[in-house]
Amino acid sequence: MTPGRAPVPWWLPVPAVVGGLFVVVPVLAMVGRVDWGSFGALVTSPASLSALVLSLGTAAAATGIAFLLGYPLAVLFSRSRSRWVGVARALVLLPLVLPPVVGGLALLAAFGRLGVVGAFLDEHGLRIAFTTTAVVIAQTFVAMPFLVSSIEGALRVGGDRFERVAATLGAGPTRTFLTVTTPRVLPGILSGLVLCFARALGEFGATLTFAGSLQGVTRTLPLEIYLQREIDPDTAVALALVLVVVALVVIGASTLRTRTVVL
Amino acid sequence: MTTHKRTAMLSIAAAALAVIGLAGCSTTGQAGTSGTTGSASATSGPTGAITVFAAASLQQTFTTLGKQYEAAHPGTSVTFSFAGSSDLVTQIRNGAPADVFASADEANMDKIAKTDLAAGSPRDFATNTLEIAVAPGNPKHITDLADLTSSGVQLVTCAAPVPCGAATAKVEQAAGVDLHPVSEEQSVTDVLGKVESGQADAGLVYVTDVRGADGKVDGVPFDAASGAVNTYPIGVLRDAANPALAQAFTDYVRSGAGRKVLADAGFGAP
Image (cartoon, rainbow over all chains, first blue to last red; front, side):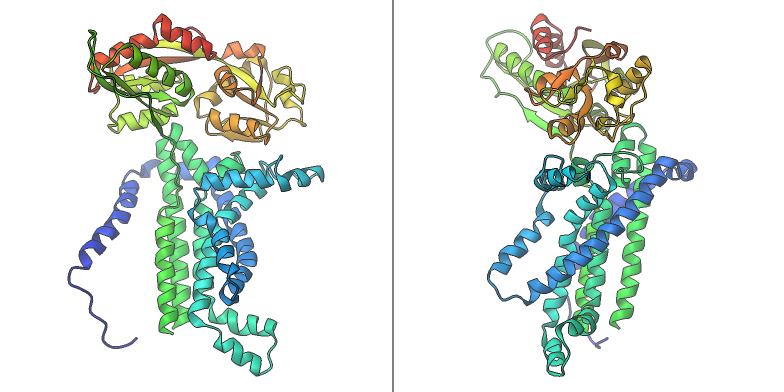
């Protein structure tokens, strides 16, 4: 866009290339292990397909919930001047740094059958344990912080001068939020959604601890891969490749969208 | 506009990084050392250090056996790596430095023997059978395998591909019942955890798991359990760095002293 770019140090590409290879080589090596002759049969087995469908569905649901709850959080975090907001942010972003298994244990303590919320729901005939709902809860828990932090970053970069101008022109807070703030941070929202979906798709530890593992109900693709690895590494590798492809498609699509929006 | 674009690109890069690692970040391996290296030895017999790869269900007994062996044989050090048997097989095949392998089933030991990774033939040293784990006090009054088919009982079992799942399928067949678990877990420890935490009403686990849970679950024995006896083999590995000590420790596990520790934990004799 702007002619002339700031020069980078001559040595910079060396660690950059090593860093790139470090990530790319293992994935390519895994692709090399795929047994193409049986690939089709392996990934279209009933167990594989139901795991894939379940994964896509739960990750989409988790992303939707994370957006509905996480976008307002991000707006409050970016606007609030209270000193407690730092504490609140740290708590909400905690799942970013928690091992997922710990997240699963925390969810058990809250939504498990004997948990604070879970016991109450259980009395009213609502059982979360071992249902697809539990999978979505686990995924939302671990993935929402990615969305919140991504959107908050976008909100902070822009400041709030457009919103203040809108207010002087007579627009109410809701109208400003929907017609000024939201379009302005759309790229941030999109990359937040992608991060969130990707993280939800890969969720393993919290799901295993909290939701269990049953074909078609709670056994998502990562759990199926982990299980297949026990008996049939070929299937595990084939399914892992499917997961990589889905992830690349999601990232690729969002890159295109982001470009269109920004340029 | 430039800032927007940069933010977006950075985020996308971050997304890419996050996604590459998305197949999960689980570690099943649990390495533990027992005791310290003894001082210089005055007794005869092999000295030095060995690493024992043992099935997760052997964690308590083998840790005890390792400490006992080190105490009785100064100058030796026995280190353990506990994980699911098939995980350990994968690690050994990929060149993990192990001297001894103790498997929770014969199928996984066969994989080692078949690929010529064992030195000599492995020997059986223990057996284990299934039991129904229930909450303390057995609030659901479960007395037999058939009780687990009741719709009011949330049952958890191992998935068919793992050893305890294979045993579960065998007892189902032997008893002529058709179980409908709400979850099929990846390992017997996960099944036990679901019962301990009260998520599930009942789970099919090994007798030794109930014994090792220290009262957090009660065990209900059932007749058909004898239809699926799991045999544990142990063997020295071909690439053992210290074959003499590896053999000595293997013999110790199969000795009277080893037998006693295993029996106390609920393991049967081979």
